[in-house]
Amino acid sequence: MSTSTATAVPTAVNGVTVPADQHALAVAYLAGIDGPDTVEVVWQSAKSVKQIRAAHRGKSLISHTSATVERGGTYAERAGIDGPESLPWGAWLVPDYLIFHNGQVYARLYMVAGTSSTFYAADGKPVTHAEWATMVYKSSGGDNPTGCIAPKLANLTVL
Image (cartoon, rainbow, N blue to C red; front, side, top):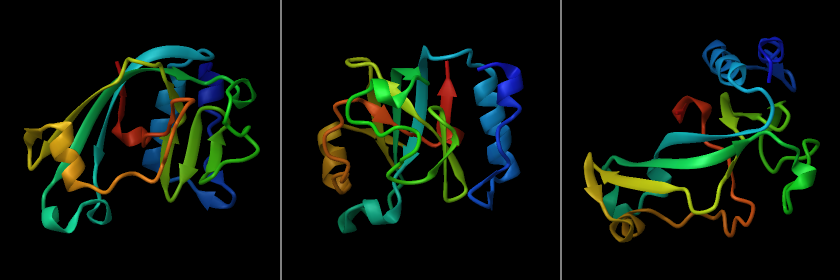
């Protein structure tokens, strides 16, 4: 995406103003993109209280994931993904790249198969995936044959 396109990130979606900090993140993120590409990224995800099993409430549960991802591209080319005219949640801020939902901007990415690695921590100490699975409720996401993910842009770093 060219710098001129990146600076044209809307300041509102469906009548809702995009917070200035989120808008700045979106502009900076898109400035580094010149069309669909593949990059290495890392992102952090902290579990909310409702995602943590009762026996582990009060713990800080954070996962750090790294992966090779594809950014951009059209959804019509990818099986199982609706086009930019339809999203199951949120609204397009920049079609095929960014989604705006509940005051946050999310990056629409596609994980390259076999490239992801996740580190799990409970109260800052490493735990195994098996231990992690006993602490959190299973995601309701189900199968994801396309590898489509949408981490919060604020938690995402492009390497």
